[in-house]
Image (cartoon, rainbow, N blue to C red; front, side, top):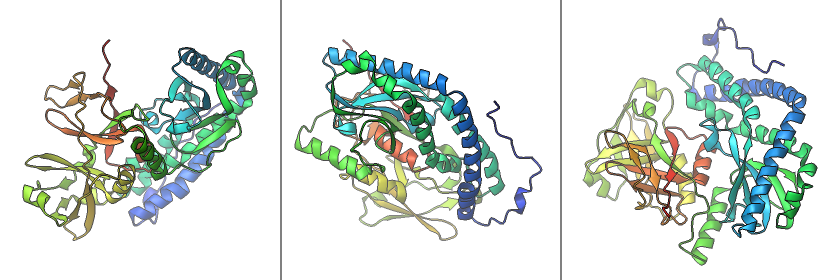
Length: 419
């Protein structure tokens, strides 16, 4: 069966579209183009899903059995207690690099707040996300109708809401033979709490129930709720406990956005002042006609500073309530003003000797020691010639889920402990 889409004819008259602003272009891209493309691609996927149901469910059974065997082995070694949740965890940090082998995570009754949650296997979701890539390719083609008003990152932002459909399709396959999967001797031998739930879902977010009676919220978990629970647990119990997640990502600037900006360096006097910093800045016409980045950098005599948009600052402030924020107001040549904020999380001395460098001493692959990170979800790592922002998995996923632009996430290596 052909599971590809038909590309629109090149003769389509895109210039005739009555779109006059970026807001109108984004609205049309999401509500018209994406809605149509999504229906078309999902119809093809559903037909293909029915045709290959047996192969896909058998693949699920095999991968689920491997995860169960790993759980049992961890419990036999006293590395894992009784479990309550098994989740095929669809990570956006994997999707952006086209890695569709998603982790199968297991948790206690504390769910994502379990600090001993483990990755016990992988689920290969390439079949499903081939169709996601088709959606993206077709939407990127349609985007060119709105020349000068949209950018490539708008496609990923628009597709963000489509992830829920793919959770449903994976869960549909898992449910087909889940009774067979949980009837195996391996699963029965696993030490479990009274109710075991099996999910397909995002990390700290929406999920589809495959098996069990769920007592969990059916809506997205709010970052402030999760972080509040984490903060209270750490503050009231063990301040030096290891972070709930062992995955971190460096935030790198997307230089395509910076090319359109001309920002003069900030002086030490400006940074010491009590009033917001005001800076006149020149944007190129091309840059201003597209969009402002959510993450940019600016220089001072003491190095580079990280700046984030109002919207991204709101999210980061939820995750780190101890951080202080200082605004900087940019005024362009048209007298429009834009508020950014200095992103200044705590600097942690965690740079590992296992970090690798380019010839110019910039970072090639960042490696960090996790011993002193505790519950840090955002922090600065000072390297020989630059300061890098690093975010924890939950914040990285939240940033991608909300369609922020102007940055790239690069996974950080965790230093290997010798001996």
